Image (tube, rainbow, N blue to C red; front, top):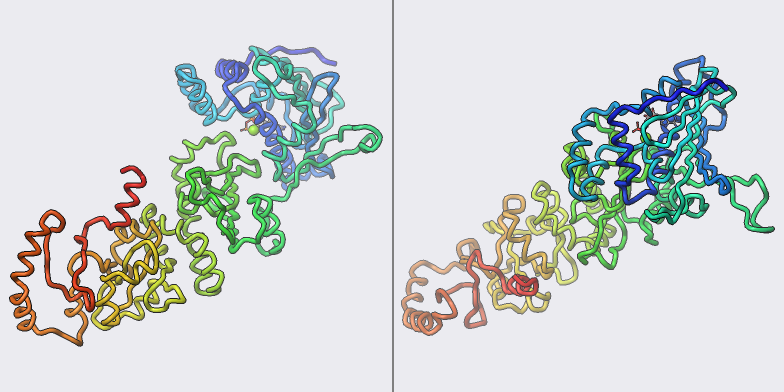
Length: 567
Ligand code: ADP
Ligand code: MG
């Protein structure tokens, strides 16, 4: 071969490598994700360039793929692709230096950061990419030939300060990265990256949806273990979300849902969308048919996974879905994020916030759609997730209107059926300006409340709200469609004023006040410790008296709830 040239890494690269080698990352498995992602990018680029550059047509292969080779004797793991490849100059520029802006400042921050976790999150923002190979290898050999060129280059380094370059003839187009692995179970407790099951596990977790096949020669386990030369494809490659909606069958959606949710029944709703423009992403979201048992436990996690260009990044991506929609399952694949994007970064990313806003609207829209087109399905979804959705009325004031449209509640109108607020408003009596409700622990308790008497007698419909969360949202939501929400247990309600018929004249009222003045005064003094005021009421028909809250008082149920929470 030709002579070997030794070059120095750029100063920043050297520092970064030192950080990588002396391990900033607790999760070392990600090195494989990074190398596979580079190989996949290289295959994408070759395909793209051969479309526009006719001289490349034919230099590519008819079988684009990524191959993993584990050699237990040599203790090497190779990631090979037949993608675009690199020239010698590419290598110097892309692998020898870090072109990213802000590198120096970032490295300084990392050096100054006191704890390992802080350093890890900083480096995560930056992305170590190819260098992550040095977390698990003490030497890396990279052989590559750029499509459309005749000769290749061999690059090798121990990551310390320099790397060797050598021209090599006879290399195939593409790149192979060979890791000379550090000993497993060493001081830093490295996993055995030569183990087929470990490799399969990492590929499945991080790279399953890479759209090129990732192949590995099968290990032989005796006579029945397969014949020499057997090659397995480790990834499913099926990024359903990247396919056009019209080409995906319902069965495929349901199967995919089962795969990501570990839930058996088919989902109640599927949302598949693609956003183009400055921030491209695909989203495939599902509204399950049944709530998980732990929907209301503190440990309940959000169901949306984040991918970046088919590479799995994280589960439970809270930046993409608000807490009250934690039951929504699915995948968001963003095209323009770093693989190392952290939860903190996502929380503050303006574009991610935009994505979240849009996804929330889509989910609420899908449920609204069910309500108008498939009432039975909507009713099931509401029965499962209504309580969670009502949390949204407290958490997400941007979507109050949309959420109120979805609310279903029991009502005095029909003991068998629930009603929406819209239906309630349509039934409101002439002159009625508020939506009346009463909260309580059970339907029976609410129905038998003395507060109900006058409303029942005068034919006013009252919503019966028995979820603990009802106590909270009714206080936060000022009105539905211009009609204030009014608890019939709070404040002064003058039913006669709004009733129209059955009016008590002013003179009659004044006479009654006079008749009862002595009693009211006596009651007021006797009960002065317990109540603020005793007054005549038109609320009651058969009961003699009832206790009414102030307009802004907490209700008895809420009081109980607060006490249970230790407040
Ligand atoms: P990133 O992928 O974020 O650009 P990396 O450190 O992973 O950062 O890779 C640096 C660059 O090296 C890539 O952008 C690419 O140009 C080049 N590169 C790495 N691996 C390969 C490969 N297998 N084939 C072709 N080019 C590669
Ligand atoms: Mg990369």
